[in-house]
Image (cartoon, rainbow, N blue to C red; front, side, top):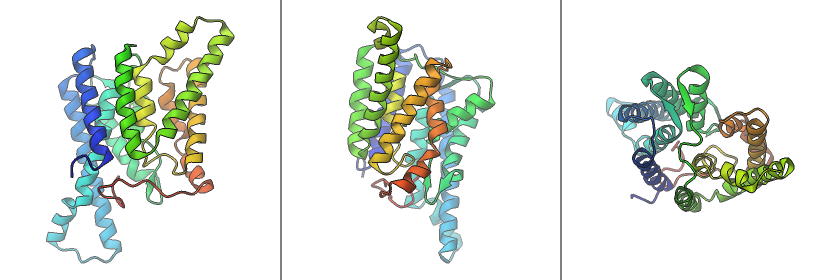
Length: 289
């Protein structure tokens, strides 16, 4: 049923943010690029989820007939996984900028494929949208991320915080966002004080819609982040520290995305140290990706 799955709330909010950004901000994003991102992510998700479902049935010695192949590609598990693919596509549309179709296709394809390629057991450890963004930034010359695209209007921040809070309440991963934001803002405050700058500079640095979107919607992906609360808190602190180092010492405007990308594999080690049940989506717990 609609709205039983936390991903339904994510989809509503991300679509609203995209509509808001296109109509109230001067974004260099056209409709065809959005369609390319959504089509690439959904087709890739459908194909790879069907392949995984096929392998599962083969390993279980399930008798495969023509009707069975049809049942696989339209199985509830595969269809349900399309929600995740659409969320990844919307995340790419909100954060990644390019004027080239092939660049967005590369980002979408690698984002979804990363969930099936980089895994330990039944869990992937890279955030798909983050992986696609890093791939596009690394292997193309026409992709960029604009951290200031939302400006510093306070009502954007309140909107993102309210929507993010509702989603986090559903998935129970508020600790990750709160820890990251507290650590990040504290480190920036100490640097601001050390340099003797006005607190207006500190507030301007933190009044970023992109930073809130990252903290509330990308950093809290319950399927790829550490399972235990203790490990999530430690992991969030490390991402905040690395982000500040990359941003303030290496002047990397995309620091938060690189920090998440480099520290994502640490999830495997943290899950070994602090054992906890893995998060499952309510609609199809075992196999949804």
